[in-house]
Image 1 (tube, rainbow, N blue to C red):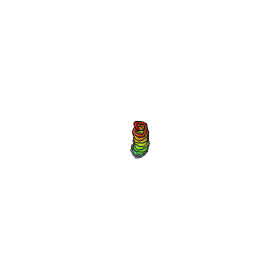
Image 2 (image 1 turned 45 degrees about the vertical axis):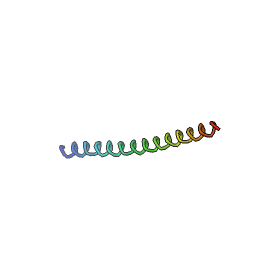
Image 3 (image 1 turned 60 degrees about the vertical axis):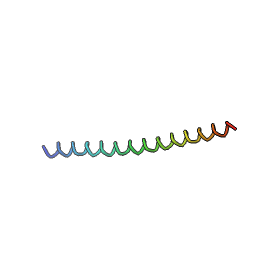
Image 4 (image 1 turned 90 degrees about the vertical axis):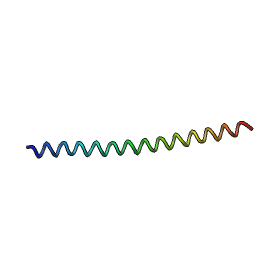
Length: 50
């Protein structure tokens, strides 16, 4: 019975670790998109200053 409990907690821990890595990946992608939008906005504002 204790082995099942240990296996269950282990599975939950592994699922949480995988989920955290998934969230980190999404956050990195979102940061990259945000930087691209800011960079594009800066370029557009520089072109408008002529």
